[in-house]
Amino acid sequence: MSRLLIIGYVWPEPNSSAAGARMIQLIEFFRERNYKITYATSARRSENMADLEAVGVTSREIQPNNDEFDVFVQELDPQIVLFDRFMMEEQFGWRIDKFCPDALKILDTEDLHSLRKVRETILKSGQEFDDVYLEADITKREAAAIYRCDISLIISEFEMKLLIEKLKIPEHILFYLPFMMETVSSQNNSYTDRRDFISIGNFLHEPNWRAVLNLKENIWPLLSKLVPDAQLHIYGAYPSQKAWNLHNKAERFIVNGRAENALKVMSDARVCLAPIQFGAGLKGKLAEAMACGTPSVTTKIGSEGMAGDLEWNGFIEDDPAQFVESAKMLYIDEQLWNKKSEQGSKILKERFDQDIHQARFDRKLSITLKQLPQHRKENFTGLMMKHHLQRSTYFMSRFIQIKNAIN
Image 1 (cartoon, rainbow, N blue to C red):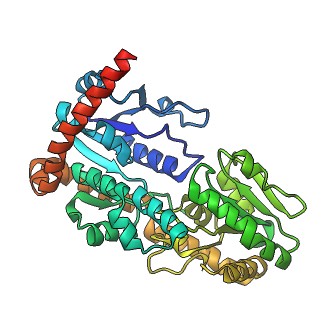
Image 2 (image 1 turned 90 degrees about the horizontal axis):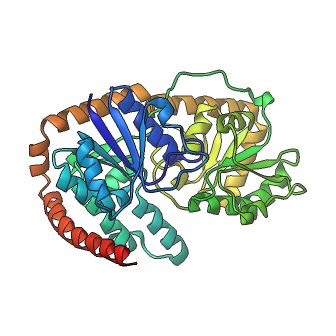
Image 3 (image 1 turned 135 degrees about the horizontal axis):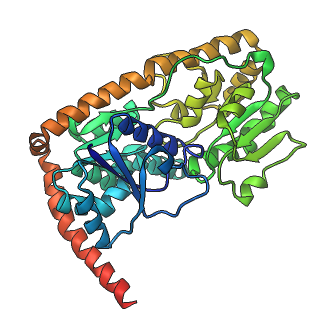
């Protein structure tokens, strides 16, 4: 039985975030191929985390800058190590290189953190994207982690293009792997069985919080006048007090907090609203809306990488006034709603079919594992970066350990 070590940024919460759902998809992929999986992280456990032990995954708490990790990985001797986001590769990658040099290193970027952070910066500053992106420290850090890994999983075609064309990263160390979803059509609620608008997303994720503020301040004051019988329901894990303060029953702006069943509340809603102003990757909430037959109105960034050349299952609007008008039409026009609802199923089937992407990933893993020495030789920049990181990180880690021992 092959062994897989996942070094997680957090304990996966599939009902709280798209990142958590993505991790569970990857775990299921390897479980179905009879891998013995160990999930290790230095994060605190949470009440909303997935029950990994129930699906046969061993969990382990680890600490950075601690030699106990070295003993742990040598005893485990994994064939594959998967890093959950580039920060985990920075902390533990050099130790894997030293103590498990033959292990295939995979980086699941989740989304490009550098892209999201830079977009947030330019939203505030108005600077040119290229100027900020290529100069940002986070871009260099994330790109370096990609170079040091054998395969990096990229969730969006837009991000693949960005890495290849802007950063000149070799294509053979990148692998496009979007959401892997079951695309069997299910019976969804009809137009007449639904009511109200919905917006959903983890409140700890800054793009989601900004989208809620955008709804409260710019979108809903106009839209609520056009559909006076409708409410806007806001769902999301980990709402802060400032989020609860937005709740206003008189304005029909309802903050509900965590949804016990996200698919249920999405299926009960008539239209999903996602006025996302910055971000990266794919939007789990919009994929869920498609799975539930719920049309959506979002922005260009919100829809990025999802539909390809296919028509959207709703409307893509960056202008607030047009966003409001499109949301109104979707809500009141049953014929239009039915057409857009069906389009979501087409997007899922053609773009996110689980069987298709699992087969592609199987082939990539098989080829890379068989040709790993040659694969690495063709990435000399990565070999060079590993060499220098091992030395610099080794001495920094030793410094931190000595400092902690003294304290």
